Length: 144
Image (cartoon, rainbow, N blue to C red; front, side, top):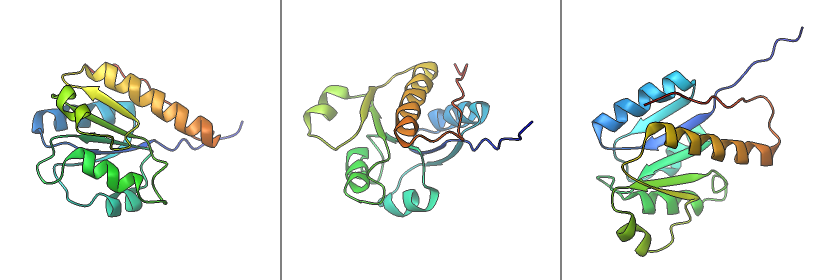
């Protein structure tokens, strides 16, 4: 029988709320994701280039540079623009009216972590099926 190495999916998150930071950490650990969470940054490109995530989650109201601007940094860089970006915020109408940032999805807060994990699975499934990558498997979570 062949031994297959299953490489965990990588998720990069920018989130300043410590409570949500902790909940995401617990959920991602339980789901087997490899992840990095930052509380506030001004240039996301070096972090994405270094970590090479499979998905980026951005809180719009980040304390240094908003999630929309961070998304633009990713989507304007030819080396990383293919990576799916999800922006989320408590203020969906205001954020969506400000313009297009090139994000792949917007999620209104508050959200259930199980719903977030389902959306993450969908993005990862779509991204990796396009790449025909077979060494990863999706792990659904029971995070609450």
